[in-house]
Image 1 (tube, helix red, strand yellow):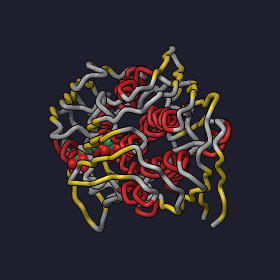
Image 2: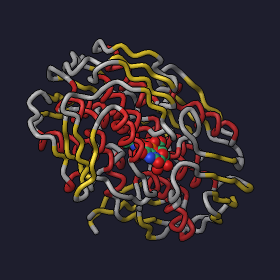
Image 3: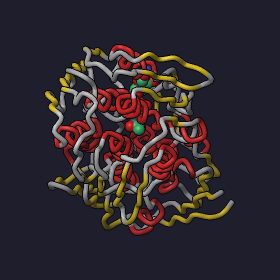
Length: 420
Ligand code: UD1
């Protein structure tokens, strides 16, 4: 196993190119299941989650190549409908095969993902929506066994909660269903919007793209003419590097970003005293003389993303004053707190709220990564800690950050990947 050794107190400078969004690439790869032709997808991040999904699709009978962030995938040859436990347990997003497999083949067997470090994460809303579209669903031996022998039927579905992968699953299912599906309270995340745009480009009639109500006219079971496309930039990776510049009081530039996807994040950084120059596809962060505390509440897009909550908590440890961070989406997404405390942070937890007292003098320590985004908070803390921090279990980071050490080293950080 590898760990990261980071020597703190180094200023960063220069620029970093942001990769394609992992959370867009995953549904877009499963979207290939709806295609009648092979497709070429550009700007796919080479991260562990993408490799896991390509492995799952290959187990189902798809073939793909992946080189220089370009994935060529042919899912026309898929002949199995079973997403088995061995793969699903590695990555919850495997559930994104459920909608496409069911709508294409009329049946599928997808292992239930189970809980994870950040909370229970049920998939009841995915299942309820598919049932409303006529699917017969049974849970047996840890698997979702879904059947719709005559295909899924259009329906009106109101999501009780906004769910990102739930919305994506049902949008993909609706694209091949018989008749019209109306979806209310759909997630508006840019990753969901890109799924809709690729479908619209393939000729699917979708009204309301980018809003919380979609009307989708299904193809009646016919596979789609999906065109080649490029994955949108990763707004969470971008937000993480913005925090890295901010916490080290450095001027850094992000290239190949979409600033429009980062409005809530940019606003928060500006309120904390940072100046940010925006261009069409780049952002430059200027250091703040004094970092101001902040009140942050995570919510669905376009609100402040839960996937950046941990990174902003690390940043708040360096603000002068008290910050309050409310986590509204996941019940257990504070796993980074105990590790930040071990580095000297002043954080108190009460329910879904964290009170962060700054400015704390952080010291290097051995710390443990617990989930993907929690781990990036530890990198940020390590960048300003006195001494060399060792971050263990970094396979969590490899799930979602492409070329992490390469990018941080290029910015001037002292970071090394070493063998335990
Ligand atoms: C996606 C993202 C993840 C991000 C999250 C919220 C991917 C691959 N992952 O996860 O990085 O943190 O959105 O922005 O895109 N819920 C239910 N029942 C369901 C589904 C969800 O109760 O059937 C609840 C969840 O427990 C959670 C909330 O709804 O409290 C939002 O979850 P959801 O948007 O579904 O998260 P994911 O799609 O799993």
